[in-house]
Length: 343
Image 1 (cartoon, helix red, strand yellow):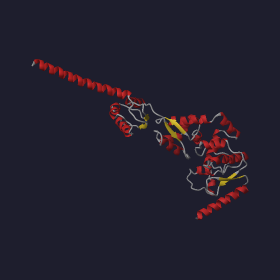
Image 2 (tube, rainbow, N blue to C red; image 1 turned 90 degrees about the horizontal axis):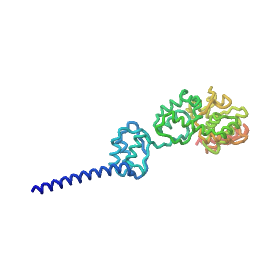
Image 3 (tube, one colour; image 1 turned 120 degrees about the vertical axis):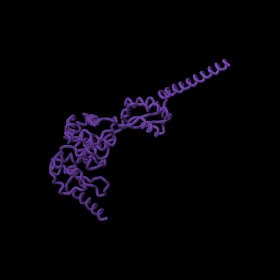
């Protein structure tokens, strides 16, 4: 009897030991899996926003449909005491433990900050940046309009668009406003190679003048093949001392609020009004894209002094070397416009 009791006790201890060993084994395997085993079937990008809890990150990753072991992810991320705000990426090589370390240390994946389309004002620029970055658009606008902020680049607010070139920039999503503009300035400096500065000088311009004229070209035509021809017209006028008489500069004087520029608008007293003041305006009237900057630097050499919208309304222009020829083109366009209005 005593033997039987002792035997049962041994078996009970053995069973308990086996259970404990099994639990320990499971825990060891779990720890090994969490640390070493890839836990995702694909690549996924996600954001950790201010105030976000680890459980919300887990939910975000689970919704991606690429998590192989949900429990591994939960037991690794849920205990996190802090996470760095940012933009992150997991892939097929990522373990749960790596994700936890990535979030704790802020190992971000860069994002593409794309500036494209028409950017006529600092406020529009600010919205485009604010829509893609953590930085608030109001803070961006405040920086872009601040003489103190822009003094670090040696420019006043009127020359903001000389250091911003529409492009796609790889940046950290959490970059400060100053860091974003530092990047713009760095890329603008890189654009102005010795060769481009020489091309500008050959046309009687400096980089600021090129940016200013390029912004006018951008306001006149969106048709790329025609931009060097339009640039050539304005360069011809500058060489002859003729007023540029560029409608986009008048639109700028009215904050682009006019649906149509009338004769009375041409009288506005502003240094940006190229109908009243000869030469280039004080600075760019919009953010010129690279195509327009290159159009000025590689302007077409011709004798044209005038251009008018083509009566076919296809977005192109008719060019003329004489005012008489220009009047004929203008009349043709007006007839086409009248005919279209009557329909």
